[in-house]
Structure formats: C-alpha cells, structure tokens
Image (cartoon, rainbow, N blue to C red):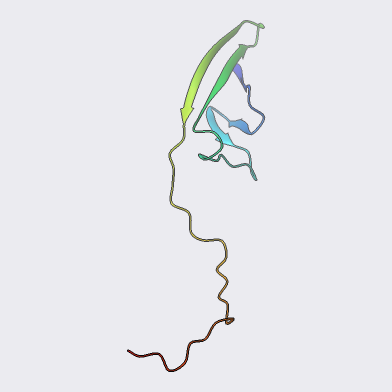
Length: 79
C-alpha cells in the first residue's frame, strides 16, 4: 500500500484521485499554470516524488451584479 501527498494545501487526495478541497478555487487571471509535487510513500517508508504541471483555462464568468441607475431619464427625444 502507499500514501499520496501533494505540495499545495488547496488540494487533497480521495483515494488515488487528486481534487481541490471543498471551498477552494483556482483563478486563471491570477495563475494560469501551477506546478504540484506529488509524493507517494509506501508502508516501508520508501518514497517517490513527481512534479505535475496543471494548466488552467479561462472560462467565461457571468456578471456578479448589475446596477441600473435612474439618474438620467431622457424625455421627448426624437426617434
């Protein structure tokens, strides 16, 4: 058997599946690419480390809030 570890605390392993921890997010505008070190340790203490590059894609985001102002109301404009 082996235990897996990841260098970035935003991630966790669920069995052999690497995933973001609940409540965590990655932001393309902040970091388009990140490098993780994955370490596997067996029951005798032997370990193996491998680097993995994660490339993020930019996704369209809906507007968070839209404010309409009634400060300007035009009356009797031609057309």
